[in-house]
Amino acid sequence: VQLQASGGGLVQAGGSLRLSCAASGRTLSSYAMGWFRQAPGKERESVAAISWSGLSTVYADSVKGRFTISRDNDRNTVYLQMNSLKPEDTAGYYCAASRATLVVAGLRESRYDYWGQGTLVTVSS
Image (spheres, rainbow, N blue to C red):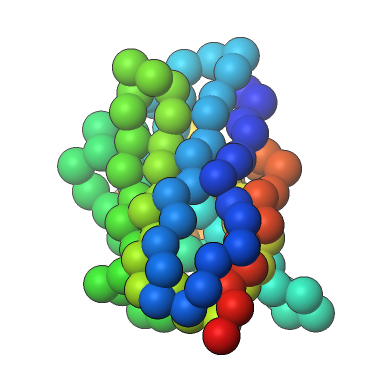
C-alpha cells in the first residue's frame, strides 16, 4: 500500500491545520492507521492512531484534547485535525499503516508496516 500525506504548511500558534493521508494500491479499511512526527534534530514520536473501523483511537499525551484522528474508508483516507497548534508541534508528519489491530499496534512505531512521505507543519510563535 502506498501512502501520501498532505495538508502541511505554515500556521501561527493557536491556529489549525488538517492533514490528510491518502492510500493507493490497497484499501485502508483493514489497517490500523497512525500519525507520527519528527522535529528537526529529534527522534520520531507517535501522535495518534485509529482502528480499522474508526471506532477506537489513541493519542500521545502531548496532543490529547488538541488533535483528532479520523478516517473515511470509502475515500481511503485518514485525517489528523490539529487545533490549538503550538510551536513545539513543528515537525514533519508521517502517516503509517499497520497490519495489526490497534490494540496490538497502538502508538508503537515498530508495529507499523507501511509509511508515507511526510508533510511539513511549521507553527510560528
